[in-house]
Length: 318
Image 1: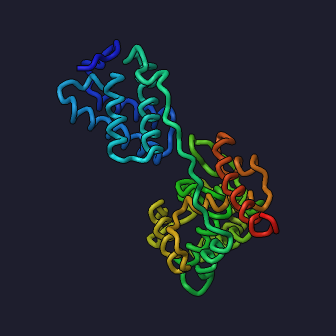
Image 2: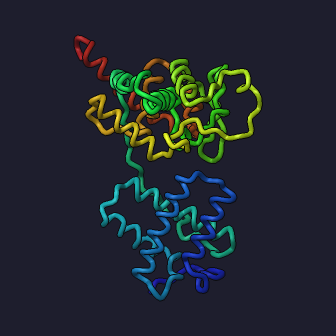
Image 3: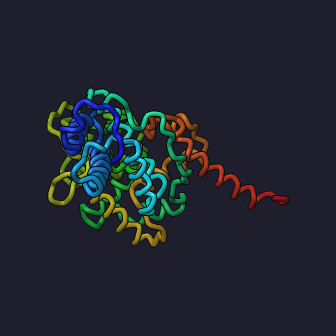
């Protein structure tokens, strides 16, 4: 049986209890997003199940370095993508750091362990032509409230470059219609101001008026403490992320776009189109809400490829 590091109480407290403490810490003190919390929960549940399956009577070995190596090797044998394994290892690293900080472990079993090198992935995006086809597939009048909402939703998602979770959490009060800005609650509960284009604002106002709310009226300027969702379903409740995905997929099919389209692709398209048209990287970083410029730099690979294609097509000796 593998040896495990010195610890305070890993021999007496079940692993699932430590996991629960960690998730409470993430939700209460770190205020992580619901999507992040779900991902951490899924990854730690997977590790807990591995320990239960292989060491049913010795759950305290979960902090043993050799056990962790065995788990990571098993992930590779399951044919997980490299980036998925990197994410799961990062979750374990955060978990063990928390246990050490709380005094449950005296040493971190992943300390000084080298990480797996992440694959470079080029984000999928729509061309400007396909983006226009998608937006114009949704009628702006004559097809009822649902079509008005869908057009406003897609225009807003593309215009502001939002994550889908950020979009569905917006309230009417978060949009400053008079100066074209939206207050967005992003990852880590960081609030940022994002510009919204005139076309997106016009379609949004049309949709809101159709559902009986005029954001430009005199009364709308007054403070309103009632949270009014920006985008709602036809039952009058806030749209979910899944609903937005379904709406987008439906209109992409109608627009005869061959590739699979998802909400994050509109965010990728937003960033790529801005950079292609000369926007500087720092501004794109600010609008996307990236904490690190290196995260935004992935889009420079896309624009470089675009420059290469233009060069190869246009230069007589390419």
